[in-house]
Structures are given as C-alpha cells and as structure tokens.
Image (cartoon, rainbow, N blue to C red; front, side, top):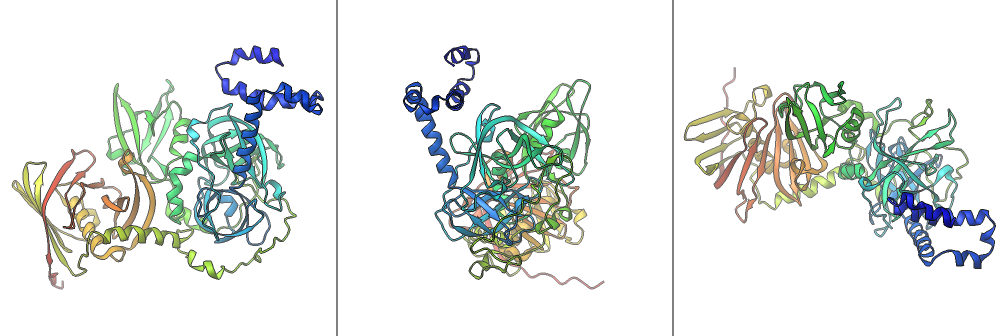
Length: 606
C-alpha cells in the first residue's frame, strides 16, 4: 500500500483524490486483510489527519441526515424523499414524487416524527417540486452548494428512503463518486427533461427520488431523480442522475409562486455545420432573439456565459433557465462578434402544462431508463397519523391551499402578490377616479418634453413634434413599441392602471418569481399582468418598483422602462430610461408630475 501511495505521485495533479483514496480505500483494504480485527495495529497505521477526516465525514453525515425528508402520499402507498432548505420547512423533491398525491402530504424526519406538508409549486419539465413542512419554524435545513464547482472524481453521498426501508424515517446513506457533469438526458415519452445534470455511481434506488445529493462538506449539490436500470428491471445499473442545485436556484422563487412553472426556448433551432460550429438553423420572427438581430446562419459562440461547441451543450445550458429570463448570447456573423441579452420564450403552451397540477401517477418506463421512479415496492405499513386515501384538508392548514387553473397552489401566489402590492402603497395613495397625469422634464438632458396620460388618450409633446394617441384598447395590433410612439404611451397607461387600481385593472395578475434584471442586474421579483392583448412584467427590487416591460402583441418588440428611483415624499419617479430593440436608449428626467381629475368623454353611438 505504501508503494502504491508513493507511486500515486503520477496523479499528484489531483491531491484531493489521493487524500480521498487513502480515507476510504485504505480502511477497506485493512479489513479485507483481517487487520481491522487488530485495533491497535489499525490505529497505529492511520495518521491523525486520516482519523480526523473520517470523524469529520461522520459528523457531516449526521448533520446532513437531519434535513432529509421521507415523503408519503395520503394513502401511505409508495413515497419518495426530499430535503429541507429553510428553517420554515421549505423542501425540495421531485415532481414525480408528489404527482397525483394532492395538495397535502405526510412527511417524516429522522427525529421519528411525522409532519403535515403542503404542496407549493411544481416544475414538470425539470422534475422538481417544492413543498412546505408544517408545525415548526426551526426545521434543520441543509446548506446549498455550487454545482458548477462539481467535477468528475469528486466524492458525493446520497440520502433518502430507498424501498421505504426506514420506518423510523432514518435515511439510508450511499457513498460514491461523481461520474460526469453537464449530462443531458432526453425526455422519455413525456415533457420531463434532465439537462445539465450530475451523473454519479452512488447507489440511487426507487424511493431515493427527490432526495439530496451532498458533497463532502454536507452541501446539497443536486436532487436525485433518475437512474439507468438493467433492461426492464428496477436494479440500478450504476448510473444515477441528479438535477443540479444551481438550476433549482434559478427556479426557487418560481416554485414559491405556487405555479406550474415552465422552462425556456430561444425561439430558434440550432445545428452543427461541417466545421462543428453551432449554427442557427431556424428562428421565429416573433421571438426576442430575432428582434435583437439574431438570424439564420449565425454561429452561436457562447450562451448563458458558457462556450458552445455542440448542440448538446446548447441544450444543456438552455434547459436550466425559466421562461422569460434574459440570458447573455454571443454570436458570430461574417467574422464579426455580437453580444446581446435575449429574453427566452416559453417552452410549452399554457394548455400543455395546465393538466400537471394533479394528473394521475405516471406509468413505469419501458425503455431501460427510470425517468419517473414509478410505483414503489409494496409493504409500506399504515403510519401513525397517516390520512386515509381521500384525505380531507387539515382544518388548521386549510388557508394554505387554494386551487386555480394553471397553479399548483394559488394561495402562495396571493401571498407574494400582497407583499409586492404593499410596496406600491408606500408610494402614496392614488385616486381610483379617472385622472390625468402630466409629466414634464427633459429628454437626454437636451430637449424638454410633456407627457400626458389618461384612461382614453396619451400625448407626448416635444419641440419637434407632438404625438397624440387614442388608446384603442380593442385593437392591440395598432400599438407599436418605442419612446416616440404609442409603445411608451401604452406602457405608461399600464403604469397608471397599476398604481390606481392594482390587480383589479387586469384580467390576469400573478407573481412570476425572480430573475436578474436585464440579465446582469440585481435579482428582482416579477409580477405579470395581462389585459386585452397587452402583457406587462413589473420588476421589484427589495419591494420597490424599478421598471417594467410592455408587450403589446407577440409580434411587436418589447418596450422596456427602467426607473431611476423615486423622489422622496413626492410620489413621483426621478426619471426613466426607455429601451427598445434596434434603437438607442432614451432617458427622460422628471421635474414635475401633476395629477388631476379627468372626465372621460362620452363617445357618440354609431
């Protein structure tokens, strides 16, 4: 062994790997040789550093096991695993673990206690769900790691409840190695898609689904969910796949919105040319990337901050983002490089996702993969406190669930809406009666302007021209985007409606989640509103409105308004900047904002 370790100088480029080899392999060799029965000899052979490392590992595992959750549906048949990520009970698991289980579940921790839990949000495409354990505010949460730092050869351990072995909810531990990173797993007869996932040889079995994959520091680096199996059996073939925790971080607030969340598409397809370059094959004229200038034949150089050398790499990066995010993209055309931030489109239509709120349990895979976990082995006993199959909502928690089309749990969305609307109230009270708003100031520190917004008309007056726009709400196809036409006027009409009437002004009003503002700014909360063909996304930084985007119709470029801040005590913005694809930014400073009553004229009957 000594000679082998000395010869290990050949792999000195991975000193961590050598240390791990000594830590885990050496004791096993001693045991096989019968030396483990001689405690004195074993202690003499092991250095204090090795013993300390082993004790650290034992302590890390003991600490991590407190956060591992055993999850059961109401009837107590089947189940899966999860991991606590906050002291108030927020828990990550797989979508296929909670699929069809209803809004309330039973969960167990290694303290031997059973807790009620409520479903919050689901991601059917990424196979992730968020639930909340109830009854405590001091749950033992696991820290989240950085899955981008994970490398092949790193040690990792999985914890969960495979085959429902632990009736006292003490999780089963399996230890192994990261076999690969940035793996792509194709959908298996469903919309479920594992992108940028972590492959491990750590033993993952039915019941481990939704449980955590830890690094050696006890940080969660992934959520276990998929395995390769031998033929049609349910025996792990040595390849397990975990959804990267960094992907889940992007979706965390989207899951907290209580929605059935969606992943993203660029609005374009790509292919590899004869020189192995990734080329735009087709692109939709209505997508944001097209408005930003991307065209067929352009070479994708990087996407999401990562170099792109294959279609597989592109799909891996694309799959980790939620719908609506802005992502950096670099492309090459005729030898010139171009850099931009593109807003990602929805991967699925609303109709494709609406049935996932409570569908039937998925069938077992037939292609040698294990994408859904499938029905678990029988034998799960009726647990103390387990609800009957048709569980009634616990009365004390009834307020935590509200059903609505397109949502897993609308009650959590309402909670976030109220928090953000409370921030708008701090700006002051705006009359609900028809008002006329008049902004005055300077454009680009040069020309004065006057902007008037009412319920039926908008006017932008500058020295060179005056534009008056009657807000024809029934004909959204007449609305354009830009600072000097109807686009900005419509955007400020929506702004007036939000501050005056709040959610009552819109046919749809909901919390989306969070995203980096403009792709590289601070993480902001997002509200979405829709009315008569107009869609807006409102951005809040720590509760303060910092801007919004207005989409009049899908084929129209977005009009982006970014506020400079708010004048203290006067309830008016200091100014704003308007960004429109293909046009330079235009800044409006505000010297005054006057609001006054306005009588809506009666239009003659045709």
